[in-house]
Image 1 (tube, rainbow, N blue to C red):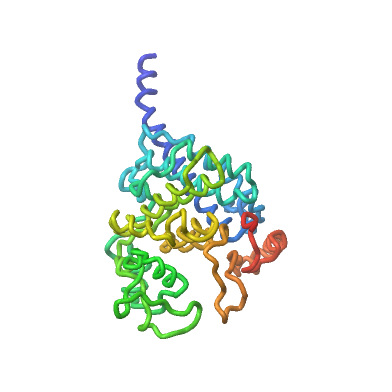
Image 2: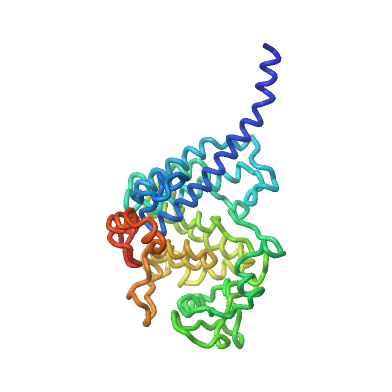
Amino acid sequence: AKTIREAIVVGEPALIAQKNQLAVIEIMKVYGFSILVEGFGNIPYTEALDVNNVLPRYDDGLTVYTDLINRLSAAINNLNPAGAGFETTADLIYQGNIGKWKKFANSLKLKMGLRIIDKDQSLGAATVSSAIQSGVFTSNLDNAVFKYLDGSPNTNAWWVNLVQNSQKYFVATDVIVNPMNAMNDPRRAAFFSMVNGQYVGGKYGVVQNYDPFSHLGSIFYTPSLPTIILDYATVEFCLAEAAERGIASVTNPESHYNDAIKASLAYYGITPADANTYLAQPSVAYSSADGTWQKKIGTQKWIALFNQGFEAWTEYRRLDYPILHAPDQASINIVPTRFMYPFDEQTLNGTNYEAAATAIGGDLLTTKLFWDVH
């Protein structure tokens, strides 16, 4: 009996580690599926990973998103920060730190709760409250980032395009440069290059010369530039919104708004003194900046998400700020509100594709998804 008990005790750390590893895998699966739902709407889900079914049906987006939140909650409950996770070198995000993974999962849950709150206020508020109580990011040290290496082929895609392939296709646009200029935003030095001592944005959505306009900043020419999966600035913006909505006893939206902006500025190397100067401007300060809380938070969050394109687009769709317009020569008259399904789905999975397109209101760039109700 003693030998059996000793074997069980010896085996417990390995079992805890295995449970943690499975929870981490589940968290990343939820993250991946959430991006698909937020981009497309209805997606293959319950039948998506069945290798014997090459023609999966599409599931309702709201049903999928609700299930993803439940799966995320279960994964969080299965994490044991006192135990091990994956080996340090095998975990490319948190190097086996389960406490960090738990914060990430809760922060993802917080974000997902706000994504769905305008569609299902009860579920959204409960999700946000649960995430906050369990523990979200508290500093930039918690950021979930994917770190690249300095050598090919394990470099950031920006470096591949800008340096290795020497592509000169894009310039900064006046859509973001002009408002950042108006607010003397110190992140311009990180985001963009200068032209004759100024930051100059080109016309959005048209072919134009390359040299007269600002380009991406020097950090984007760094092979090891990390990709941000989720950061502390986003969490603080979410907390500011939660405070405005009166959720989970979160108060003082101004404080969270300020902390969000400070976190973003700090990530890009801006000093605390310069951050305070930026926040003191009437056009930036929460008490005097123009518009509703949606406009104040939405505008600053959109700028902070500059290097997180999908997230910036999704927050624009959800909060409707900043106000963006389609280019004059665009084939549609609004900024797209979703991705269209891959063309292969029409030809290879036609019946299920047609059912999904009909269910969401048409496989169009202008179809609003279930969570985008304003």
